[in-house]
Length: 193
Image (cartoon, rainbow, N blue to C red; front, side, top):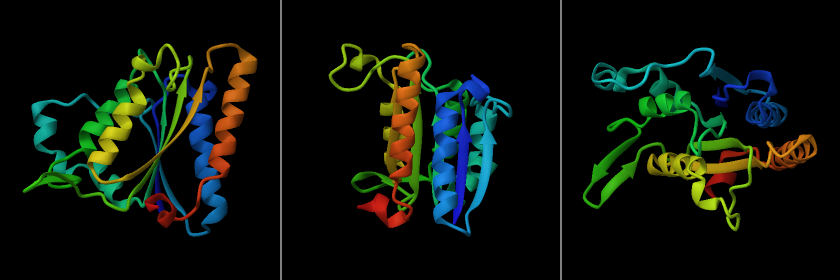
C-alpha cells in the first residue's frame, strides 16, 4: 500500500500535528507490512505560491502524481490565524487540478479521487470545536474537508485542540489524538463506510 505523508507545521519537532501525523503513519506501518511511505515536509521543502506559470503546468506536476498514486494520504496541519499554513495551501493548489482530481459533469463537480483515504492530523492552540464560543473562527478543518470531499476522497480528521492552554492541556490533547490514531481502521474499505 502507498501512503503519502505530509507535514506543514512551522514549529518543527515541537509540533503537535507532526507528532499525531507520525503516530498515524506508525499505526499503518504496524498493520501493513507492504507499506510504502513517501514523506514531504512542506516547511523544509516549500512550494512556491500559485502563479499563472505554475497553474499551466499543474496537470504534469509531481504533487498531483504523488497524491493520485497514494491510497492513503496523511496530512499534519497546523492552525495559524484561523487557517491552514500557507505551505499546505500551496500544495493543495497543486493537487486540486481539473481533469486530474476533479471534473465537471451534467450535474456539476465530480471528484476523480474516489476511494482515496485522506487522514488529517490537525492541532489547534485554542478550542474551536462545535459549541465553543470560537467555533465560527475555525476555517482549517472546514477548508480541508471541503477540498478533499470535492475531489472525491474519504476524509477523516483527528483533532488535538487546546494545545496552547498550558502543558497539561497540550499533553492531554495530544494523548487523546494518539488514542484516536490507534483506533483507525487499517483498511481502505473502512473509510468508505
